[in-house]
Image (tube, rainbow, N blue to C red; front, side, top):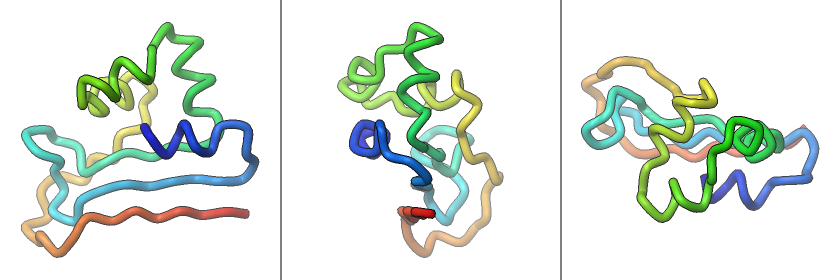
Length: 87
């Protein structure tokens, strides 16, 4: 969510943040994808990104946007990834 705030207004940027083990804490999501439309779409749904960020609740924020990455457990806990693509 913090990355989504940084790229608002930019074009052709996508950010993936995910864990290689396929889960993020107690959730079923490996992570999420954000782009320059994330905050606009959230606002249209009445979601206050700052409130979710302050509550450390990215899961419910990105679930509402259908932007979670759900792979299921991979049983490979190598690292957390953050990939930024700029076109």
